[in-house]
Length: 266
Image (tube, rainbow, N blue to C red; front, side):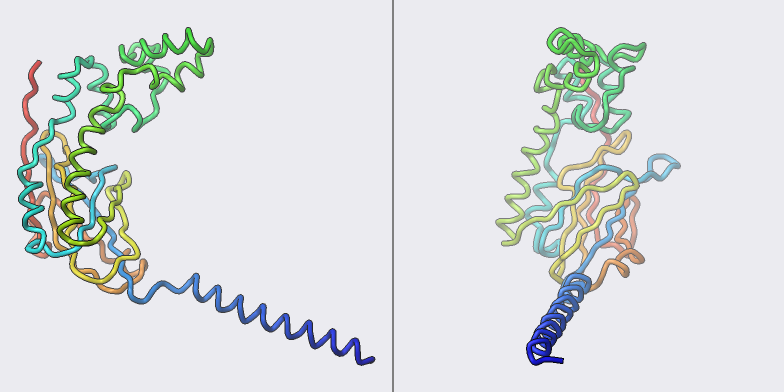
């Protein structure tokens, strides 16, 4: 075995050892959770009559500080009034069919669910959708494109005006919370089973709230709940969900405001 071959072999082994060491360090870094971070598995449900349901597709916010520290914010959100979805759309002259379509999907805008063909051409056709579809058919000459792009032919206040109205109110409350706490507000949206996760949280005490009451059948429910976050990982959080409900739970420190939805002017 000549000297040049030995040098090359040594160089290769050195390179291989460096790669293995780097790879091990990288895998360990990416797979090991941060030891000083916490996780909250949020579960939200509500009781309507004798039936308990999960609160799906609703946004919740994580605000630094306990309920007492966020007292001013909580008083603000407890007295905040936002028009109900039905009252908003009735005020905009929406058809009964559109109001029904929105209610069935618990939608705040027309973007929250697919507009199926039966809602533009069938017996269940929504007048606003059909008019927008017909306009698209004239523009695109294609039924598929006309249905896919019909939202562009809807009036802005019908398309997403209610969502924007609520978002403006939420943005003001988030700004108040961030000024008061000195920390950014995190947000998540529950899935169809009313579950969501806050991850990578600095340990401490937090307030969890939806900021504006969420519509739940015939009422709206506002939560402002205190939660201490400790260093943990997702596996532990999965076994210990933080559950919010409109029923009082002595183990959960919450302020809950439940109001009946208003009767809308016809």
